[in-house]
Length: 296
Image: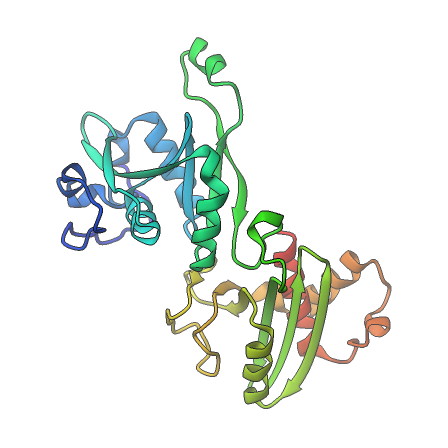
């Protein structure tokens, strides 16, 4: 049996979204999660979906199928609940049976994506990158690739942004009672950083800025995961309010040497003295970490 290396306990059908069809209620528990389904028995398309989902485990995956963006397994349940969509099921292979499925029309992708991002979800959009008729003539699956990853702090699409407020992506580095904070609005190019002491001041600054997403360096195993507002994690410092979206990132992106070099290269300067932060290490670490995600 071929499974993903990260096993998971299958969800029961007791807590399905309100708009779940009878077909969705009959899905076998092991088929509700892409990590527990028997992949060797999946259709080629479903196998590819599971492989892409492995690569973007922190995001909900919207997968182009004809005129729709569909999603399956646990992501189907998440999206159906979040957007109040109908949860149904789809045949995934003769030896597997049906798996949860929901979807949105391709012309409504931006509208539904905006709704998901506003609720704190990261989204990976997997598009068809060739003419389906070409693949059909060659008797194979149409080629699909992830073309966009949307997170609350990295939106650049004008129709997804609020015209009257910044869409800040922030990064925080904490060392005992001292902290560094960097924040950028990718849509406008605004980029600022600061360093101070007293954690209460950090909280006040975050509350003032109201960032859409905050990057946190951690050694936790669930790197890349997104904490939505209200969610908690052992990786989240106790001093930080849980009213924001937090993205867990590797510590190495926030080391002083790597962060400093990244700033020098991206800003095309020989010294950080001209930016006023040469002797502010926490400031540099936060800024370098923020710039790393700026170009992900």
